[in-house]
Length: 492
Image (cartoon, rainbow, N blue to C red; front, side, top):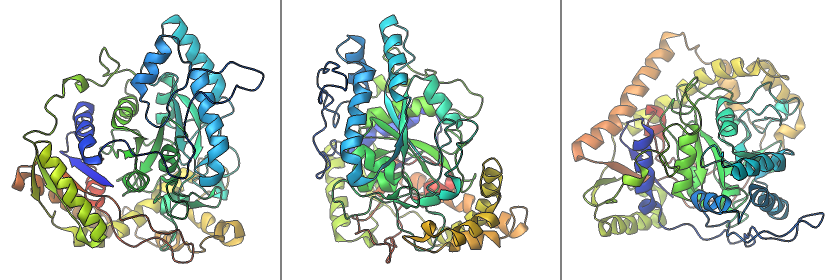
């Protein structure tokens, strides 16, 4: 439920340091989702009489532990992948987090096993099952953004981040459900719902909402349906579902992870990022994903232990660090009580804690959506032109009007309609808005950090999970994600 915004430095080492510090903010690994079954990679014998592998506690195991098992021959990627596939088959009907599994997953795992036997692995993600949010292009599976408008032929090419994962030896396990069009369609949406995948449920309490838009990625991790997952964020769409489902989610600095091949809202704010059940897996996945177009892939920047550079030299934890606590009491007494307990834990760990309220929040809220409307029109038109189906936003609006499946939870597409008439991004009115947004969002964080001599700002990312209700829609409470999202800074 907590997010941390470190300084704006973009280096992987800096972000990894923030991730490690985040273990104290997030606490111990979350208990297994209350309404999910125990997660053991042993499981029943495979079809055809294959042998049962030694058990692995999927809820708590980390990537380094899995790689150690694969290195000594006591576990294979094929067995691990099979365990996750069995668990998806058993658990996913309850939570509807996974849209589809990749029919080649076991073939990918077998190729990884061969590399492990030869001693030629490609890094820490080799053989590790990964789920992708279904707005990330995959050449061999549909990429729908949750909309039946894109449910036809797959894209022609993988997203750049998928290429990096494949090059690193990761097993692409499948695609996850999401809030349709990444929650940028209606003014009163229901997070976790899409026409393609239906409603994703929170694995801890099934009638509660998982938040969005990376709903399926977060819920799948909470239910131990994959080792890691990929989410995307424009404002809050990684960190809110991570908080709501008790997992780790990182929104990287803008541009650290390539946006190429990801269904867009805004090139000025969109980024994909890693999600996992623990901090170390999140950091390792970030190290693979990081790098814009044309940069080196997979193992660049990884040390001798297969960890990002500097990760093994982060002694001292939070001792002597200054943490700005942004309490956001509007999120309610339960969240405020959590912030009090968090301050106590941080002080116990040696941190100095000061209360802060970053400035300019009202003005940021006034400017952000008008700017995003202009950017969405520009960017979604460019993306749709690469796919079969509607070729621009106007055709997409008409598609929704004529396809009842798109209106089974909520009928509205007000944001689409507003974007259609929004000023073009060449319009001076838009450019003035975006310039002010970037300036105020960065000053909001930079001035707070400088005034209080902070190392990090900690704040709640979400209220308690609300009951899912298509008629009522989502809880209106705005989380703390906006300053970092608009500034292009990282948040965890």
